Image (cartoon, rainbow, N blue to C red; front, side):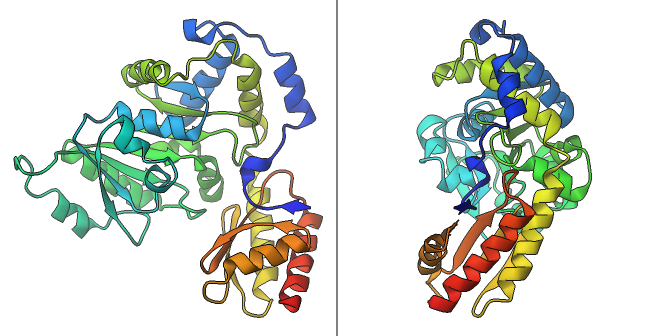
Length: 334
């Protein structure tokens, strides 16, 4: 079975497992786990921030980024398809009690939209805006750095903070051929994931200035996220950070190859975005195609008229060719 559902399905490599087995550990709640501290310091440095905090999931990293930048009743501006809105069980409303204000279309708000939303500040009838939210990559799509700079500049000019959901920031940096700090530039807080494209088994991080991360650490404890000898899992993330970033371009190249092969099949249109392949099917039949692909040994995700396939470090060149052949057989039998 070739599993293309997500890059979260990767398993630790042998060398990663060895690093985890040999990790030096301590009590992280007390700040005494040396491996966790090393991971946090390296992550912060890569992102150009003062400090970082290791957490169990991207969900927690995002919620902490929201929690430290807003107060109850304030607005967060985000895209209707951001993970914050559709994939985190309404935690923004439940935990931080903020009011999401949503836009659609491009994965970044237009200048005219922002100019319209910022009017009327101080009006007693409306919630005060506090945070502008972006996601990069966005369903595999790289948000242009110029747009990010425009938006963070707008936020700071009007007294808002800016957060970047950078779960796959590493993919964006690899695609743009820039350092991760360039992608994170201008954001007050940034979340990154170690268990997606990098292939670590557990964990994410939130980064920002030292005071913000101090408050985020208290928030992590509030959420029950304090960990003890967490160096065992942090070592996997640290290994991935040091050894798997440069190879991510291979995933992008394989995704491009898979999209080319799938686009040759009748009724399908495929496009590669970093390590993701998005396949457009005849209207409303994505689920049917997903079932047909699975019957031929290829797992994917889909709904409506789109199938998503994600390439990760366990997927080889031969897997790509085999997946395309299996898809061709599935399409022929539909």
